[in-house]
Length: 105
Image (cartoon, rainbow, N blue to C red; front, side, top):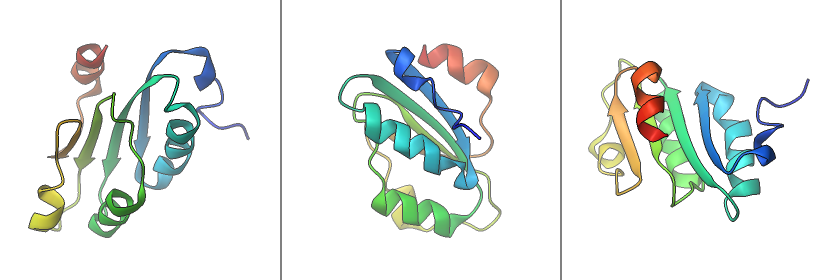
């Protein structure tokens, strides 16, 4: 099966949407196109350990928005909540894509 991001090279401004472990192909697209395109990420994740692991190990585009929506029931540690910076935001709750995507564009 092809990646949902297999046509990513056709667009200069990208919005990648992923949930859970689906972040893996999105990270591959970010890594492949980070030097030539603006990449925005919307990621919904409910596992706090997965969130912490990926925050520790993933590269995010510094020119685009990286919006991480935590949907789990376990409270986040203060260390995770403090990871937000100018282009990375950890938000509690589900993303409202119908209003979020037009605001990124």
